[in-house]
Image: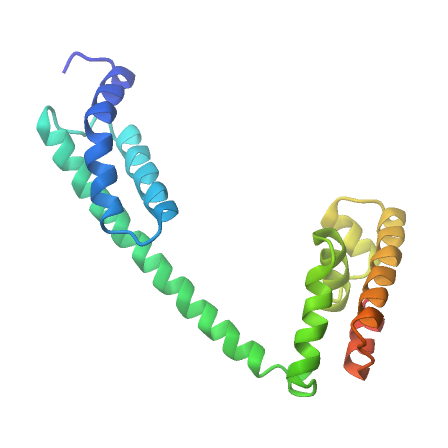
Length: 180
């Protein structure tokens, strides 16, 4: 062996990167997923550099690692899809959604989505997660006073958005009031 592990890794990486990338790209639908799989493959190679065979066997070993990483990635995607489907079913059965006409829900959703991330986070922490001002302050790492001011402003922006969208549905008002 004789080569320093970092030097050996660089040598193997330079020789095997393109073949491993091609292998993974041909098996992944999304180039971002392929990049993740290749990165994980070489992370494993770095951690296990002492176990890696010599010569061309190292490249073949990496193909085996990439194959297993791909399999894990696919299993993870399937689990994610199953959890997402289950969550959609739970949301569809939500009592809040059952009493709100779909048209109004999408309009309220659009108003909420149009808010800044910070406003949306504040309002939903209060309305959906039932956190009080002190709990929101701890969650966000802010003072209670800062939360009160930001929440007041977020509610005003949400109210203006609802009015602009012509929403005067009791469930929308309940959402707004529960965020108070």
